[in-house]
Amino acid sequence: MPKLPQDVDTLSPDGLKQLVIALLGKVAALEEKVAAQAEEIARLKGLKGKPQIKPSTPSGMDKAASSRAEREWRKKRRRGAKAPTVPVEERVIAPPDIPPGSRFKGYESFTVQDLKIEPRVVCYRRERWLTPDGRTILAPLPSGVGDHFGPEVKRFILAQYHQGQTTVPRLVQFLESLGFAISKRQVVRILTDNKDAFVSEAQDVLRAGLGHADWISVDDTGARHKGRNGYCTQIGNDHFTFFATTGSKSRENFLSLLRAGHADYVLSGDAFAYMRQRHLSAAIIAKLAEHPERRFADLAAWMAHLEHLGITGMKVNPDPVTIATEGALWGAVLDHGFLDGTVVLSDDAGQFNIGNHALCWVHAERLVHKLDTFTETARKSKDRVQSLIWWFYADLKAYCQAPDPDRKAALKVRFDRIFKRETGFTTLDRLLVRLHANKPELLKVLDHPEIPLNTNGSERDVRSQVTRRKISGTTRSDDGRDCRDTFLGLAKTCQKLGISFWDYLGARLGALSADAVPGLAGLVAARCLA
Image (cartoon, rainbow, N blue to C red; front, side, top):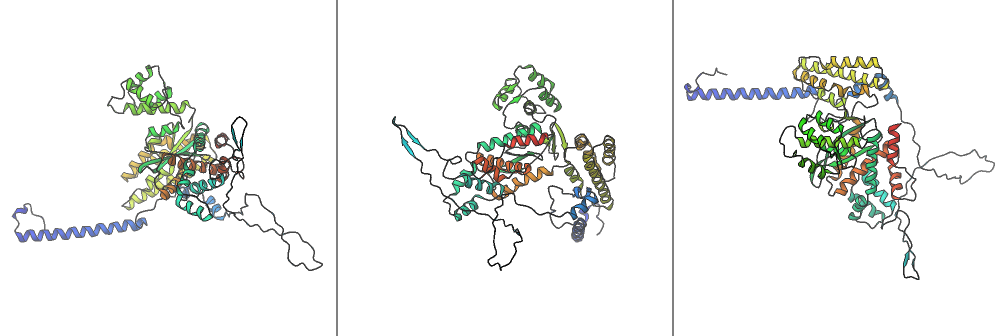
């Protein structure tokens, strides 16, 4: 390309034309070079199009950190035979022709599992009697019968919709093919009407978990309601699961859910400590503390109190209404006996950073895993740091199996060596500084070896909500939203407790063939305390 003159205005028209042509050629060459570099980067990464990142272990850290013996054991493990859990009906079959003189040599068993699905219509002829004083006595319906659909078909509809993840139209079509006279509206009513007992039990399960668990893990996912985007929050551990869909994912919303159905606000010492931690003005805290009223029945009463004190009109940073409300919510959570020393494990989403907080190692390592490298030096630095993190993660897993004070101190020193190192790769170094700032939360497991190192359990729970969202899209009524969250949470809780969701539904709906199932909240509390 010709050298660009100091004054372009001095060029003749032919000179300008030659300069433009040369510049266009240079631009085309640069575009080809950029395209070639992009192809080379994609080839080195082994990517074809948009990368598919799995939610639970996107970097394969658990696989990389597992020991060779553990990996070999997984390869050699074989699945054993499964026995049916239902009663076995025995039938004796004799051969058609037995020659004379044959000797009986016992039996040879051959088990066959089968299923019988058939509609049953019962017409109850209820006796009516007229007493001498003019009263009419009508024979009561059997237990579990309250409308024109019995508990067995209701159990089937609820199990197929929530656990089987089917749709209402398909349910209607299947039931009609069996001979039922049922409409889509009637199926929707069975799914949503008169489910207060189930919603209450789900809240009791949450209260039992928050009141007795050593740790909980939390996560959220998108959820649409009435045509608007919202968020479904998951709260749970190895013994229970709770879902709640709301229009916000703020910390105030999360604290509201942690009250487990209670609506009050409490100004306690813990509430004021929270406000100071969140840097609320000392003058505002003093104004709240000097007032004798400390408990408020609901949001309306709380906001009226803030307005009375003149706090709602303040325009300062941080927002005093937000911080004061979060503090009063936190005071209510602890006042009800929830999260007393319980570790809250999350993926570093800001709204979950409350109380005794711990961070997921998989999400922390994911930040390193997703770094783009464009030079061989940067690539080697990234690989080196990842291998150190995987090695450290494996040792943390071993520590959880056998905690040791000396090992605990050594792991803290190793953490500093890994995350205080300078690699020369600027982006990676900044990320290591950021991760080192989270040291207390990433190493929470050293003081609480019972908690997991990741939030994979929460992500597995959330998948049921994601599947429901993909199948059915948005919910249209508040009852539909609450029932979806309730039954998906109860189904997950039953699975974790080793209880058949089918038996649970039958017991709660009054099906004659169902065995008794105790209250899930009591079982969750017992498991958490065990």
